[in-house]
Length: 127
Image (cartoon, rainbow, N blue to C red):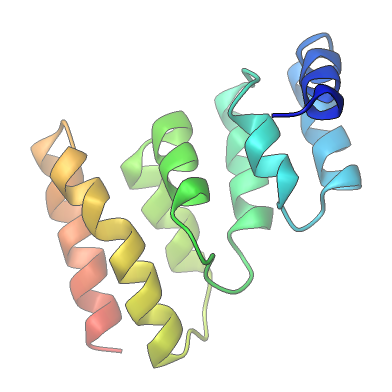
């Protein structure tokens, strides 16, 4: 992280959770570097949920960073709930999303989370 990003992260840490989430949505409406900043701040779970709904609603991300971050912050079950709200994935997007979610299965600390993730991934494969 460069100096500018460190300064932004420090600024976000000084804000209330809701204000920091609003700032991220205003300055990084599509995620991007906002995901990196989220790794360095602590927000309320509800604000992470709001950000996840916005940042994960578009096309499948090219890397797993956002999925790992939100799985850690809101839990695998809530991440899957947010992802299930997103409709209209192409087969290619579904394959890429499944690719990103499979490591969450291996890392799941809870058997219920692992079952839910496996079921979600199976649903992606069946269209």
